[in-house]
Image 1 (tube, rainbow, N blue to C red):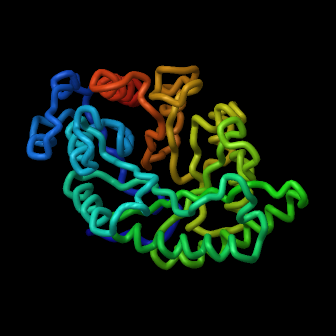
Image 2: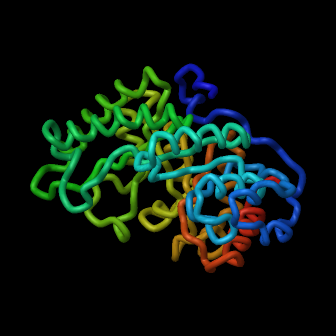
Length: 317
């Protein structure tokens, strides 16, 4: 498999997305068979202009439970990327198979989650000790996972606040952990992306705002430490999406999508995704948009609805 280019911010956003004509209807693909021998053998839809990345489960009703068949089906619907938060939990052999299939289908691998999180207790905010040591083990393991599936980005969540300690000491503790992690990742061209999460779904986390992630990235000062801007989380926690994207732009390497309320596909909530995505595209972003949300409807009908929703917000389409 092709390895990564020289480590620069631009390397966190590789391969310009292909500009295509108006998308064909995907209705003919709704009946794709779930069997391993049939999925991925039919005619392919026009590729999306933007690199939207489904995840395991997005198309399981149509493509079946085999993740490789789901990737084949996604490719046939015109998707050019894939993400898998749980990739580290898959066998090394399956990680390798997924990477090879994605390359065969001309698809990029998006994020997986690099570090295990204790959602109840402080973690990287505590500084040196067992939590940092465990985090750095996770980061080293992530290097091997990324090599097998040909990934560039790995999500990092710093963990829960210590409410007995001054916030800026905790900021410094997290910064030091990230600096050490960046030192591990840089030689391999791998980028950890810091994801701020909203306080409603994930109370008491240290990292909730784009500005915090931006400050951490500036402090770490490494091409291996950037921002994952999850539009769903930031709509809940801060709103003001386009100005916040602009303010943190030079440290953003990856976006994730989900509408609010509900965390379902675009067009189901209050976010004007066509305008937001057009703004991001106009700034020159050619990276991946992870589809980190559920489906608003169950079954094959719901999966067809997801595909149609992305056709509706695919700028230039």
